[in-house]
Image (cartoon, rainbow, N blue to C red; front, side, top):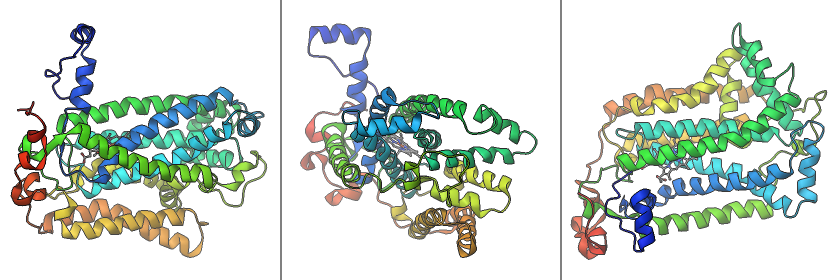
Length: 426
Ligand code: HEM
């Protein structure tokens, strides 16, 4: 992270400690004095919101784990026990189950923000790829978490998804048996899913540290996509400016989250999961949680099971190659009129796939899912490279300050870093 040489604690104890472990200096240079582009909009508050949600999921999850029993004959009952007998158990559970959905809403907005403003482009490729790894870990965590209440959807969802590995030639069946810990989804499966569901969020936290570290090495992108050139004119201190904006963004997000928790806590869930798992009775429609629906649609769109599995994983893995698939030299969608249109078409296609994932795989739904799946991949492999080569971008301002301050603005009169304090950066 950025240099912490300028931080001197006020108390003698603080100075004693700092000379032995300069952790306060690291926090100061990363979250207080850190030079933040002055033009960040509210889409940039979602990284902070995600950090908050990760903490909230870990805290509520730890309390739930104190009362939950990962055993097939007791799991469903232990959730009812949490809902009815544990003090505020219903609240902790609804915070956690709706929290998972909120986490995904925030991460999808965060990813689309990155795609629109070209935040994945050089020099932020590693930062972006760490994000894709976080997304994969989040998906694994959410999938295993959904199995724990041992309802009908938990059981059948687990069965459908783990059986997918059976499509791998020669070793597929062995992998599925290994994942299950037996010959069907049963006690060993539930136990290991619980264990991994507890572990993975801490791994996510570790990758988030790397993610934010990488962010502080290369610096934040911003809505113009222009790199910081003059630290005094183009940036403001992280605290109070970015912290205050993040707090407003988080407050609005929490209102939305609490609306779900207190008014419609089961809206995003499935009624079948209030029925205990029954391995002898398949539900009429097996559907995953909403945040998996676009990928589920891609899986089912392809007639061959093996190719469906490849497309499912490919649809996420392709994100990691985005920095190289987008050939444009201009970063932000703000100055890319053609790209902008295709970006919004892509958003609509992703939402459309989500809708189709919730429908039974028959008739027109399958045809539509196939068309949208082809478009999904064409966006990355055909549209982005070609648009990048052919598009004529709009004129790009010389600097962030020129783009957002009157006549390129004098920072001293507007209230930027230069006005607030002398710069500590080169
Ligand atoms: C637990 C999940 C995540 C957390 C806590 C997190 C945290 C953050 C934070 C705090 C920032 C800086 C503030 C901001 O730009 O919003 C950030 C930036 C960024 N994140 Fe994430 N992130 C997560 C997931 C992801 C994912 C899944 C991706 C992409 C696949 C991603 C890609 C990026 C990029 C490219 C930036 C730089 C944005 C810019 O400067 O324009 N992040 N992240």
